[in-house]
Length: 128
Image 1 (cartoon, rainbow, N blue to C red):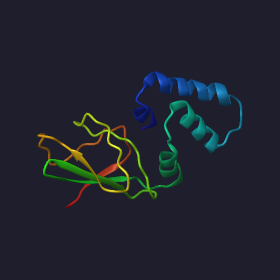
Image 2: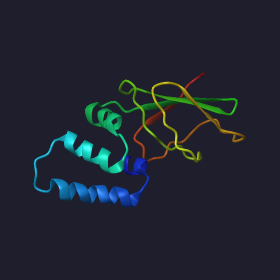
Image 3: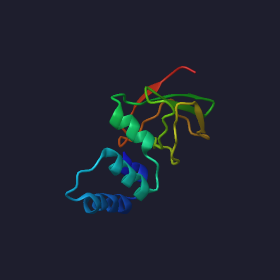
């Protein structure tokens, strides 16, 4: 997921190599690794780390579609969780949070969504 969110294979590979260089034969904390990934990627993954490393809950993307508008939010997650993600068939990245958001589907007619399999989340179509 982190590799997909970074969306730059070269940068991700550099981060992995950097982890080996920076922390080779050292005892490190989770926080040191998290801070390194955050600083080298330029992305704040703190909410992602808190969700996936410190809970057993799998976030659920609740959604419904009405009048060519995709309404969506995360549930079953930490307070104020937000994470950029991709939905198959939608060019733009979405940044769902625990609050309802809207995305204009234009003239595209869909009645359900499929999540990029690189994201470890569940989806649930709900009634509006």
